[in-house]
Structure formats: structure tokens, C-alpha cells
Length: 114
Length: 117
Image 1 (cartoon, each protein chain N blue to C red):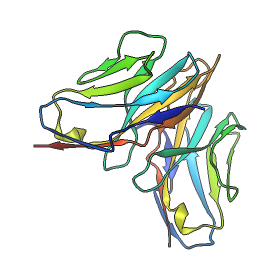
Image 2 (cartoon, rainbow over the protein chains, first blue to last red; image 1 turned 180 degrees about the vertical axis):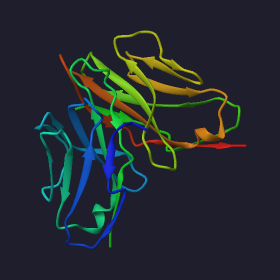
Image 3 (cartoon, each protein chain N blue to C red; image 1 turned 135 degrees about the vertical axis):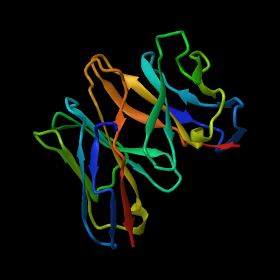
Image 4 (tube, one colour; image 1 turned 45 degrees about the vertical axis):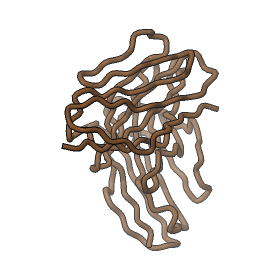
């Protein structure tokens, strides 16, 4: 158990819909990362937050948005869903600030768009 | 921009044998971390081993060890005494280290390892 909690674990929805994925980082971790893993591919970095502020952005679509709340949990919002958005979405957290460089991953949220 | 390349999409090894997975990376940074993550069929991302670029000594974790060649920008993973439970996708990853904090992980495309009895 990494200490990172993601909900829901599985989600099936239709094209055009909107979903929200939630992530609770490890206790004490201020940084949250979101990654997308499409079928049998590597993890693509989407976005990073640190203590409520956006820190870095990767190849995140404009239809996607995220935020980190004062209690440090984070949400990834995916809207106008397309078939190609079907993927495993991982959240990871880290200590940062002279940390070990290690990211701790949640179990992922599997999104299926029909 | 940093890139991570894993040139072996699939590999197989017999139980109890040794296998080496290759990884190369490209960066102009001098301070960074390198990682190998394992993703079994459960899809959970599990850290296997970690190497700080400033350390010349290769990291070792039980049956897992790395061959870190900084000048060549190479970071291979050796799995000794392979076990059936080692069957998984293995990802090499790079993270730049900034002054007081770290950066995002950049992943390679992965190597699928199958361990046969």
C-alpha cells in the first residue's frame, strides 16, 4: 500500500460525458502528479500541483483540468469525453523539498469511454 | 527536454536465470534521479530501484541491481534468479533534481518481461 488513494477504481461512461477522478496523497506529501496510461503504453505526464498551485503541465488536453484543494487532495476533471480518453489514470505524490525523488503511485482509475 | 528510451519492447527469461533490461536517457542536467518501476498485471506501479546521478556506486536491492553509466547515459536493470512473480512491465524513468525539490517523472515506453517456468 503506497498510501495514495484514488477513486473510483473503475469508471464506465459514454462519449461526451464528464467525469471527475479523485486522489488523496500520502500524509505529508505536498505534491501531486497526474499521469495517463493508454493501453499497453507508457505513462504520460499530465499535470503537477504543489501545495495547491500548479507546478508543471505536460500534454494535458484543454478538455482536461485539475486542481489541488487546501486539504491537498486533488481532482482531475475530464470533459467532452472521447473514445481515445479510455485509459488508466494514475495519481502520484511526493514529499519534494529535499526529498528522495521517489513518487508514490495510487492504484489508478480505469476509465472506459463507450 | 529529457527523453528516456527502452529499446526492448519484450523480453523473456527462464526461472532462476538472469536477465538485463536496457535503458538510455538524454539530458543536459547533472543532478537527477533514475528509477525502474515494475507494473504487474494488477497495474500498480511499484518502485524497484532508484539511483542518484551523483553516486558512482550502482544501486542494489536484493535480486535487482543496476549498471549506471553516466557518461554513456545508460541505466540497465539486472534481475538475478528470476522468479515467476517478476513477470511484469518494467519502466525506466528519469527525474530532474532542482535545488530544493524534484520534478516530474519521465517514463520510457516499457519492456514487457515474461518469466517462464
